[in-house]
Image (tube, rainbow, N blue to C red; front, side):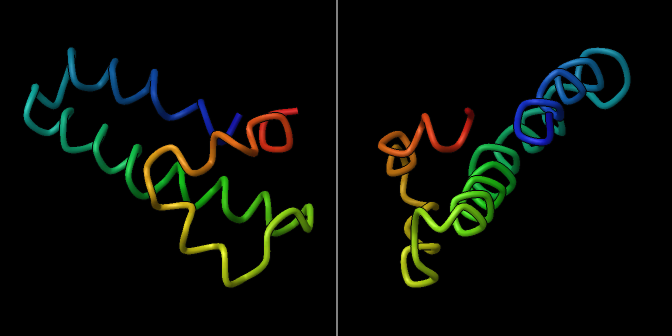
Length: 72
């Protein structure tokens, strides 16, 4: 819920209240900061990755190898 929950909220607020430029900024913030941080913390909590690998979660598509451990 924490991983996918904010995305529909961003899309709704972008259409209704904030405008397209702020909505786009929020989507970029979600994709490049919020989601990798949550995935990294979740993988650390499950002892799948080490603290040294936490910064690698910000590399695009690096988290896909841990998809099943992240979402299931």
